[in-house]
Length: 128
Image (cartoon, rainbow, N blue to C red; front, side, top):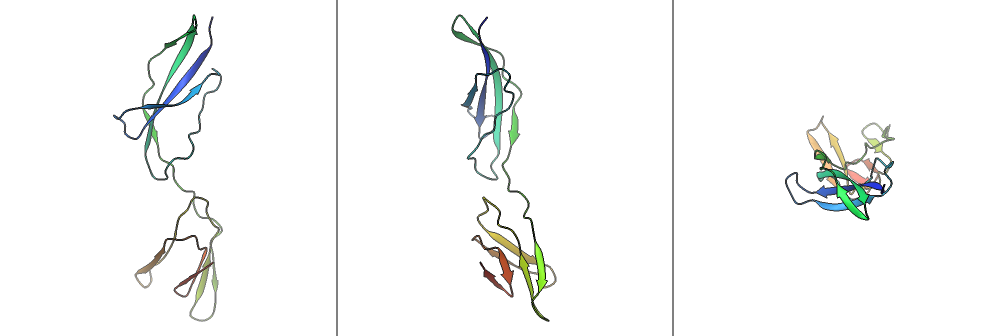
């Protein structure tokens, strides 16, 4: 009796061309973490099992197609502190993988958006 394993295939669209991204040679390994993907992009996967028979792979049918999208985690440690009678300092923890920050205020119907990794906002200016 030969060995058994799995092949994991990925595509950028459900009906697109799938490429082999991982061969799993241990039949008891039942998961795979795909890394270095683009945040916010959908990825589609299908898997098939194989068994080695006389040194050649004999394949089973492909699984159903599943999809996933890498997303950023929720910002944590958000704090707001009074900085006087007319100011509030808002601070938060840096989030790995984030390329910008956004601070929105509803009471004045305006928002400030920046493309950097600053982690606090005060009185209309961003500070590191």
